[in-house]
Image 1: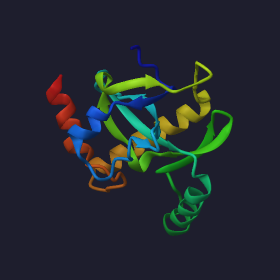
Image 2: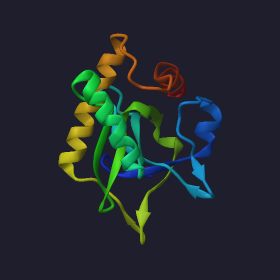
Image 3: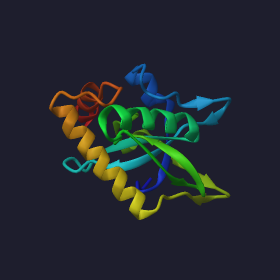
Image 4: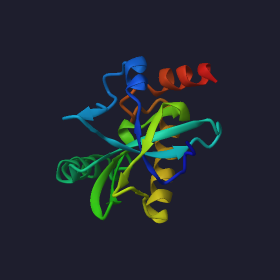
Length: 157
């Protein structure tokens, strides 16, 4: 399968079974593939993709965003944006690295792949890189153990 940036994907159960990180969002709810994950290719390793979970629970995350803005002056870990014609929360705080072999399928509606607007994709990419840079400096804004997951993925290459 060709992985395209700006598309939403579902991930194989095999990945979650292997990683065993309590902070990764569950793969399935009620027999459906959830959540959807936006794929952003790593800037240094073309074999690695950063997956950003997409949540429809916008009101829940708006409250969290406001609390973060009041406390820190901004929020770059949760971005509200359009996905499939509706507002959704893009959860950079739950992002993680993955290899293409763990992608199950592209998210579609009526057999059409769903993409996000280029402007939103740019905003998410910038915020992801900023949050990852902060993580490397010891500011842990991402919940999953991304260092361990990245090492596991790179060891498979």
